[in-house]
Image (cartoon, rainbow, N blue to C red; front, top):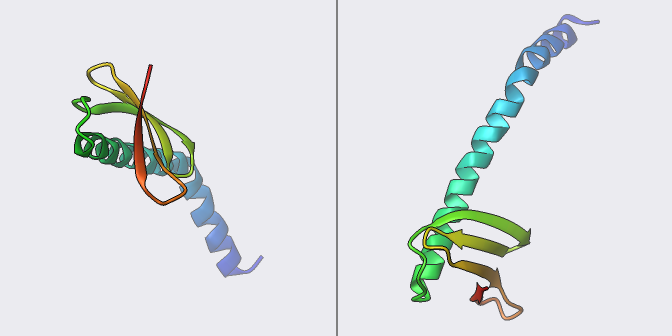
Length: 89
């Protein structure tokens, strides 16, 4: 094994235990951004929500958002490229 390969193997071995932590941090930041964006979209539609507390992705550009006030909405982009917010029961 060459020195370069040995060095790369050592770097990979030391980074692997931290990869999950880094990915988890990125996922958490992404979740916060999605919740903030969904909160803004729902508010711009004039619908009650307060703040999105959780969001589940149903597909590309398609989410179910649960709000602080108990309301739930499906937020998606339709075939015409418009953002649609539908209240769920």
